Image 1 (cartoon, rainbow, N blue to C red):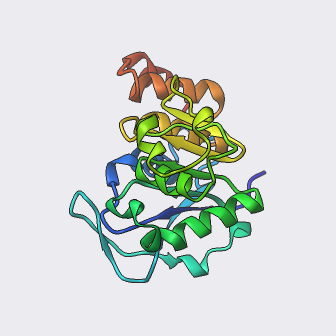
Image 2: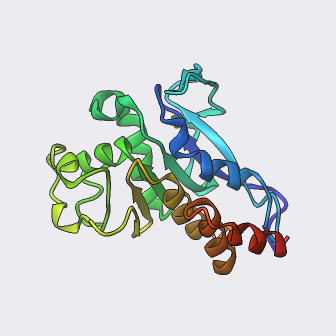
Image 3: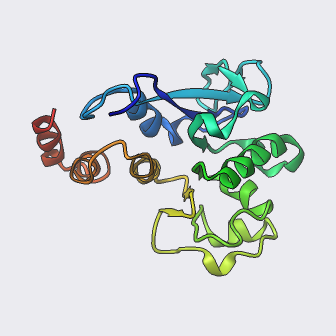
Length: 210
């Protein structure tokens, strides 16, 4: 049986965050459709400070907590969306340090787009199979893991770290769901039919398991 208290899934909210890159993931984590145990997880936003940030889409987001208040032991996952700030090591160091603490504690981390660049620059992709927007993009970080770049898949999970290209938020979400055990494999397959493949059969399959 799952706990009646939802497990936190922490979502970093940097300034200029790419809100569309995590929309599928956060919406379905918080929305209990097709789950045998509704309310298993709850998204908790994490800021560098407690000040609101503005997303690329112009939305204002007020963090629930700050990075110094997050303990990987009290979390199911850390999600890092893209943002304009990831190429500044000084600006993103607290988020990168938090990701390192999560991985060291064995708590999964999911990074997409520019967040993969920051993790690469910090050496966190050197020993893990990964992907990103383009191999040449990550190479600019100076990292040493180029031989582990997966050019075949748009979202990859290895050793507790999910990485994805910016143009595939649905695949990114699916890796997150799989890691969290949010859906049974057959349900996740139907979800992908609907949201990735635009296959209406996925919708009818999902309705059948409600």
